[in-house]
Image (cartoon, rainbow, N blue to C red):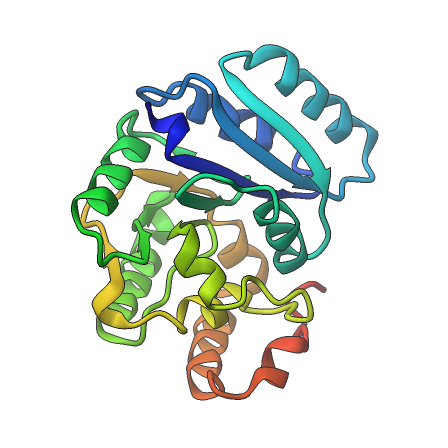
Length: 234
């Protein structure tokens, strides 16, 4: 059973119906019964809090636990402390697993190759912005290991060897931690098995996002760079 191998940690803040849709997609995954889901939540919106309560009520095939959250690095760290399975998936609340085999395919890849420490998948989005995700995928394939925080499937022991998420990092924390993995131990599946909203591109602009990706690469060995928000959260 996948529940004996995998735990999912989801950072969340005022996600509203998005977290419900995310959990619905997980609930519909093959072999998802009793799958442990840890939601690290910092919502201060009553509607979002009510929806989280509804999630726990509606998705009885999932073992949902809500813990304190914060900025993504802090939230993921808080959730990871509770993981007891061999594999740990960091999934964002706005990632929808549109292929019902996504989780089981990912776990099979990891288990069949003991050298995989970190696995990720490419995303697709609204047609207008798919070219941007293809460009990100190309950069992931040719550069240092980079798994977007929306889907980071770790061998739990390898995750802790990196030290885990650093709560002092409030920007590009996903790039920071995944770049610590040896490329030989990094895997990206070819198929786009999940949908995500293009809201980051729409809110911040495509040039801003690519500029920050380049700056993250240039400053990858400068820890203080990741401790500044670079206007990402404004």
